[in-house]
Image 1 (tube, rainbow, N blue to C red):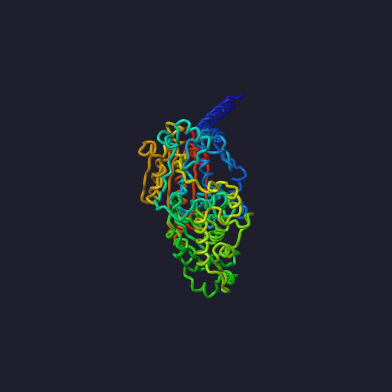
Image 2 (image 1 turned 90 degrees about the horizontal axis):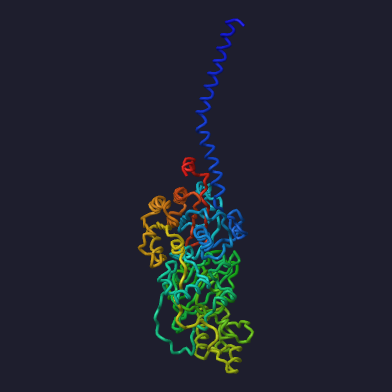
Amino acid sequence: MSPGSAKIGLKRSLGGVKDYGKKKKQKSEKSTPSIELKRAKEMRKRVKKKSPKIKLKSPGEAALLTVAAKERKSLLCEHIRHLVSKALLASDSPEVPMEWCHLEKKQKIPQAAVLIVDGLELSHFSSHREGFPKCKSIFLSRYDTLMPLFRRGHVLDELIEISLSDQEKRRLIKKYESLENATNVEFFLQEEEKMEIKREPIADDTFSRLKLLLSPLQMVVSNYPLPTKTTASTRNYVFTQDRYAHVTAQSPMFAMDCEMVKTSFGFNEVVRISIVNEDCESIYETFVRPQRPVIDYRTDFSGITAEIIETATKTLKDVQDDIRNLLPADAILIGHSLNADLKALRMIHPYVIDTSIIYNVKGDQKRCKLRELAKMYLEETIQWHPLGHDSIEDSQTCMKLVKKKLSQGIHFGDLLMQKLKETEYDINSLGGISESPEEKNISGNLLGYVLNHSKDAKITIVATENTATDYERLIPKQLRGSERISVSVKKNNKAAVKKSCKIIPEATLSFTHLSVEEDELKEVKIAETLEKIDEWIEQFWTSVAVHGLCVVIFSGSRESRSGLTFAEFRKVDLVDNKQILSS
């Protein structure tokens, strides 16, 4: 080999070494970020394996918005409370096993954050989905939720108050002698404040009028509107009162009767209502304008004509408001098959006497017509007019029948009772509500259970001025002023969200409560309003810890009980790589 060629070969080999070194240097420079990325991916996989999950059962799947509206079955607020309770307390939760879902890896859940938005309902989301782009990307599972009838603080009652099981009550009574004593020690217990109304004794009654009240079971069997799990059809009904007092033997009675027409949807709608007091004096009488076109006036029975309806100015909502203002908190409503009248009014009332039930003429529980009862026991002829029934006359007849029975004895007008009386059976011991003093109603309290569960647990509450007062009522007395519970009241929704985002990371359980006014949901403003709410939900979500449970609730409105719940565990996919690596 010539010296020249050797020199060239040496240069090439040296060049190769230089190139190799250069490539190695470039490779090492690139290795650092790629290793970090690889570590982040591996860490993400590990975290995912430990991530808690909501695994739906059949009732949960049936509540998803992906199910057609006709086939969908709503969840209840208590189902959402079960989820929060199980997430934070696991096996120590006092709740019954969840019927709509179960949690996987629930021991890894660090916190639960709940955002409640009053005034928003399911229809706002369904008809304006484009207004919730961030919310849709975060919450893949959305649940139709039947809310309590729209009363101040009632949603909170359902989310925080826990009905104690009989077993738990027996344990506490054995330990403290009474539930009332237990509330002084166990701060997860709470006394329900009850409204009492003092009235003068009634001399004319030979037995307590409470014995004529329909029991809850009788109301269910007789198809009365009730706010129970099985009555989703009452989602747009309203209570006759926001808060009821104890019914007593001195509670006043009011008889009511409605006249109905059939409208285009096939429903009966009320077009006339009459209410009389115990002296059979008319205290409320009005015609009502139906919401839909009338297809059958039923003039022979109702006495209603097209001309009468044209003069009506009251709407159903007007009548509902009038009744709520008229009736006292312990009123007893009387009527003949009153369930039909309450359904037409779309109202719920707990204290009811039904003349078609308390008069058991044939002894086989077959109901008699009001006209027959009036003839038989009052010797009066009613409903004879060819132009239809008179709702005032029917109301007065119902009141007379009840007062007649109260003056004659519980056996009066009841064939079975009369037979028992002939055998010298003590019929006064039958049925009705006990008048003995009731033990104070004690309920469990989610806030107290969470704080009892862990010494390090902390609860934060952020509310607007419209919603804050309800929380103070729900905090057990022993915990009011405790450093473990903080309550912040803000002037508006924006300030409340900003505050909650700061303090959520330090909380085991947090509630943030917003309120949207009706004016903000009018057609001109609704797009802007929903855009703000969508942004607030995203801010709220990003404040929740990894693996934390985030729940957002649209709690419905006065017009609709149809609410919406979003529930997800904070996923690691949406967390920055640096945060994963640092953890």
